[in-house]
Length: 233
Image 1 (cartoon, rainbow, N blue to C red):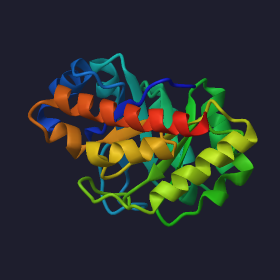
Image 2 (spheres, helix red, strand yellow):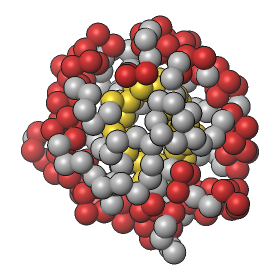
Image 3 (cartoon, rainbow, N blue to C red):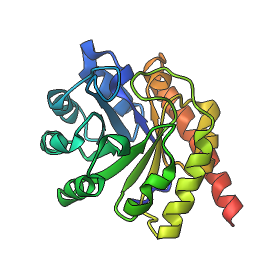
């Protein structure tokens, strides 16, 4: 997919699960573009979160894109269960998937968005042989497992490199997503570097006015995108 604006994907990892439907409806009405769902298994990352039943509940609470990020071992075993309950896209970790190409093809065969995530210490070169097969690349700008962490500055260079790689491969429809420590103060920088989709957990759900928080991220991201396009002109 191509996008002409910055997309904001609040992560329900930071939502109040005691009133999850109301939380989703709040950010939905507040102008978010996607709902981001972090699935953790307690093995690949040191945290345990949710399964397909919660994604089913998320799907019923919104018409927005439900974006599922599998931070789990053997993600290929869980692709279809999450797609069956309404995920619009599945992102798997390069580090956790032995048969990356095969699993991406499985997701795409279901007509859904296939994404690959890279941890902060994983070089972008690991994407070289699947660069034409991905619909989304997720750059982790924190170490995965917990919300509320500080943005890792070195990931800006990774975003720039991935953007060049995608452009060089002619994969102009692939979007770059970033997750971890995203706030308005760095949203412009990451979008100028090449990001299209901003995952934001605590910087949205921990704010009393979610609509204002989402709008601030949209503005900052679009400013960065404008600078990126100006530099190319």
